[in-house]
Every structure is written in structure tokens, then in C-alpha cells.
Amino acid sequence: MKLKIAVLPGDGIGPEISRVGVEVMKAVAERFGHEFTFDYGLAGAAAIRATGNPFPEETLKLCKDSDAVLFSAVGDPEYDNNPEAKVRPEQGLLAMRKQLGLFANIRPIQTFPALIDKSPLKAEIVGDADFVCVRELTGGMYFGEKYESDDKAYDTNFYTRPEIERILKVGFELASRRKKHLTVVDKANVLASSRLWRKIAKEMESKWPEVTTDYMFVDNAAMKMLQDPCFFDVMVTENTFGDILTDEASVISGSMGLLPSSSIGESTPVFEPIHGSWPQAAGLDIANPLAQILSVAMLLEHFGLEEEGKTVRKAVDASIAEGVVTPDLGKDGKSEYGTQAVGKWISDQISSHAI
Ligand code: IPM
Ligand code: MN
Image (cartoon, rainbow, N blue to C red; front, side, top):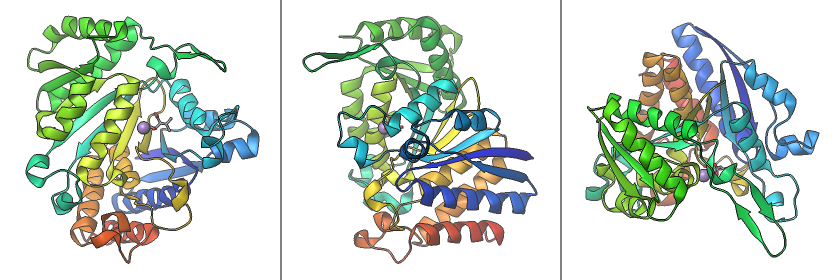
């Protein structure tokens, strides 16, 4: 298969993990006889410095002309600590999501038996938790009308019926392909927008009779995720709730550095780790590249390359089982392997047919 990949390394640890992601894709291409080409674009603080725009026209064009985007991370303390900043790196990510129409963000939460002691939860609670959060990505408070002055500010949590229907459809369909359990997470006891979500979800239920649908308030869901993560199969929720719940969910597996995601919608799909740019670690070769590598697996599977995706996942499992991991997953927070060494080990496993 021929795939044209737009690579957006972004900021902080982004370029380091991006390099690993590309290396893994090259190993897959060589082993399975595919032709993947890579073109690089600027996003985030790196793009602001070069062009003044966190998601320049050129990058948008590159993304639109590609089959998939391999994204890493954006964000920079220079902007975080400056409330006066007019442009922010994160606006680049939001612009990309909006301009590519990426309304569905799929965040699978998977546990790794070898890492169970890294989880802040007890092993018997974590069990074999395996669920997916479907987060709406181009609506809600992130994109609703905003106002900001010195003594007043607001963000509007605005959703329309078509926006809600299309994301719920993704949730129902995914649940029907998995364990057939969908949890709609909202705050319908307080928010009008949530009440519309719930009304529409109830209308849609009958189209997927094989799926058991339940409804949970977001505060309750945040608690349930820690008490009984195995309860969930697929959860679907709005943009802001999904942002918060997936950070919480990510640590169940032991490290935020393990969670990949895909964003799909009207144009080119994007594959990215859910962690941020961790600027303090930039250049130190300590960032965990596994979330980026697992994003590559999601990318491959998106194009029907199941065997290839499985091979990448097996190589990741092997690295964890063999202890070839970055310090966040090492014993006592230490490891002799850095970002690039872990990446190289995994690529070598793929190239050498070791798995
Ligand atoms: C995420 C991130 C982004 C978000 C930030 C960087 C704008 O936290 O992808 O979860 O809030 O969506
Ligand atoms: Mn987030």
C-alpha cells in the first residue's frame, strides 16, 4: 500500500517521539512491502516562531494532501505562563481539528499485565480494564462563543443536533463491534446541552438493539472509572468532559505515555498520543515513545493493515515484557533505555522478524 504521511512533530518532546514513530513506520513498510512517504510540517510554538501562526496554511495544505497525519504534541511554557499571549500553540491543534473536520476522537484505554504495579489503582480493581472513550472534538466549549475581559469571561457549550448525532453514531457503531455496552456521559441534571445529548441518544438507541446503553453523569463517571474501570466498554461524551476523563483514564494503565488516539472526520485522519509536549523533558531522551508508536498501530489499522498493526502492538508488548522501557515505566522510575533506544529496539524487533 502507498501512504503519504504528514508528520507534525510540534513542540517539547514532540520531535523526539515523532522520530521514533517514523522509524517504526519505516520498519513496517520494509517488512510488509509498503511504500510510505513522509512530509514534515510545522505546528504549535515551532510554527508560531517561524510564521506567527500555530497552524500555518502550508501545514493545512500538507495535511489535506496526505492520507494521514502523524501528530506528536504542541505546547510551550513561554505561552502557558503568559495570559496576555495573543496566539498560543494549542490553538494550532484546535485549528487542525476544526479545519480537518475531525469530530471524533477515539481514545482506547488498555492495560498491560506487566505494568499493573505502575497503576495508582489496586491490581484487583484494574483487572483487565479495556475500554474506549469517544470524545467529541470540534464542538462544545472549546469552539463555542467566547468573551474575555478583565472582569467578565465566558465560554459557550454549544452543540447542534447533527453534531451530536454523528458522534453518538460513532459510539454506537464502535460498541456494536466490541462488548456491546455504550455509556453516554453527560451532566443532564444541570446542563441544557447535556439534556439534548441525552434526548438524541435515547432516540437513537433503537437503531442498535444489540447495544446496551446506559447514561451516567460525568462526576459519577469520573468516580466509577477509579472504582470499577472494567464496567466500561465504550463511553461517548462531549469535548470538555472527554478531555478531562481521558487524562484520568490514561493513568489507569500506569503511565500517560502509553495512550494513543485517532481523530477522524471529514478530511485526513490524525493519529497522536494523548499526552502533551512535556517541555521540561525536551531533549533529555527520557520521554516514553509508546503512545506515539501505538498511534502508528492505530494508523495502520485505520487503513486495514491489521497484521501490520498487530505486529507493532506485539513489539510494544515485547519491549514492556523485556523491560526495554523509558524511566517512567522502569523499576523505581529508572531505566538504562532512553526514548531513541526504546524506539530502535522496537523497530529492530519488527525489521528482524523477531516477532
Ligand atoms: C488533548 C489536549 C488538548 C485538548 C490541548 C493541548 C488543547 O489536552 O488533546 O487532550 O484539550 O484537547
Ligand atoms: Mn487533554
